[in-house]
Image (cartoon, rainbow, N blue to C red; front, side, top):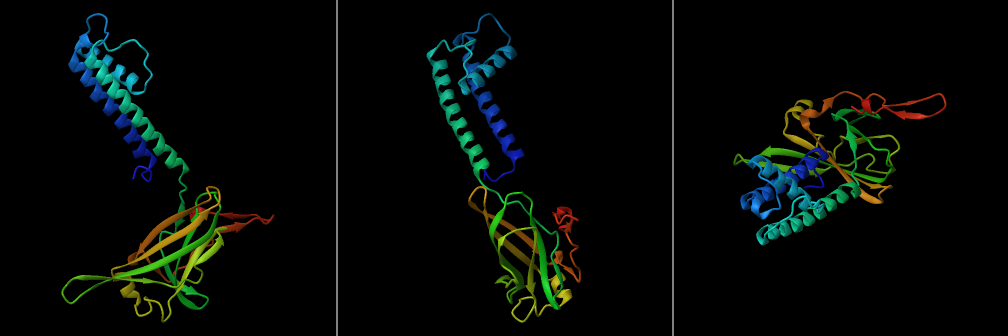
Amino acid sequence: IFIQMDWGPFLLLLTAGFFGMNILFAFSYFALGDGHLGVIGKVNNIDFFLRCFFFSTQTFTTVGYGAISPTSNTASLIASMEAFVGFLSFSLATGLLFGRFSRPNAKIQYSKNALITEVNGERALIFRLANMRSTPLLDLRSTVIIVISKKTDDQGIQREYKRIKLQVSNLDFLPLNWTIVHFINEESPLYTLNEKEIKNIDGEILIHLKAFDEVFSQEVHSRFSYQFNDIILDAKFVKAYSVKEDGEVTLDLSKIN
């Protein structure tokens, strides 16, 4: 979960953990009193606690400036425990950071809506996707499952899962955007549904995309879903790419939707 969460919450969690542990150890030193730490001169409670906190951060990070040092076995024991906890904490944080940087992550943008429209004279369910990164994706394989919830005789809910056939289910590489097409024929679970049922039925389209990341040389995955009420009937996508006079092709990601 720490590798998959967003960077903002992850860094906030690391910061909160660092300050939380040091405040806890600072209270331990504070409870012992200034007689157990090499504090020169009389100081008030606030100043003494701040010194305990800064001594804790120096011990936790093994910096050890030497301005304050334990003068009793009890304080030395707490400092030893803190140094050990700090060592383990930074080792864990380093491992998590390495895992986050080294783990490939597919960033696929899907169209906001799926459409039901005519493709080559046949009625079809379509949606569009594009790679948001400059990293080349190879050997793409797409799997689409339609889930329809139906009420049973005992007032329960039964969910039916059906994998649907796609016009093209795999690509050797993703050059621009990819419009995935499912023809609504006799083999399709949508064939017997009229337009009103498609908009009102409790259904979902589950999408799983698997690809090979050429830079990391690892397999990446992407998941997405559409509710049936996200489907727009009798519409078409606008062309998302343009060709310049010199033949250069430009994909406009703002037009994916």
